[in-house]
Image (tube, rainbow, N blue to C red):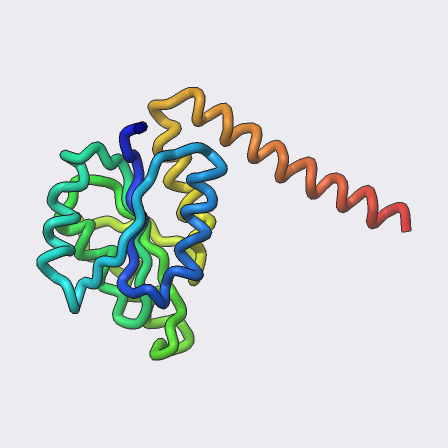
Length: 164
């Protein structure tokens, strides 16, 4: 089995519909990952254990999704030496998602969290892959091909539109 390179965590199973998009990107790029529920508020001991051991287990980047007060990404970033990408999740009890966005975005100096758009787990997966590709030319080649496919898709749609 390949060494796990990326972690995906979320505060609740209700976040899974959003966070699975990051997992799909990891599958597409063949990045070994783990996925779990780690609540900052309901399982703080599990959060501390996860954040403090991820790097020693071979994890290179962590994606953390959370809704509402959204403390999970910031708390992981406070504990772990790894890059953390925060995904604000629009939850049933959120203030239209703004509480999650601002909770993740407004980190104090010294505790950075890269933040993607509300429910933006797909982009979090792509950003994590790009971070990993800094030291992996094979992965970088896959990302180059992926971006080329995006370009080709737009050009095909443009051509189809202009034929009408």
